[in-house]
Length: 85
Picture 1 (cartoon, rainbow, N blue to C red):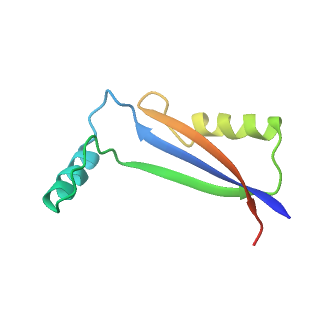
Picture 2 (cartoon, rainbow, N blue to C red):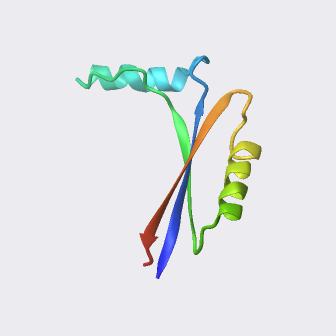
């Protein structure tokens, strides 16, 4: 049986300062990793047993409505069909 993995990534908008991302980038560079444009964000991951256009639309509304603050954050939804456990 198949199910769907849904991931919502939320990051500060590119035109806003990201002090956590900057600190992480500096730490990576100090450890020899040539990181650039490092951003800190969050990922919300969940699974659903079905996917259709109505559910997809509701997930996108949820991403913009309460999982992110669209005034200062951008979001992206990824959906992938996966095998059940």
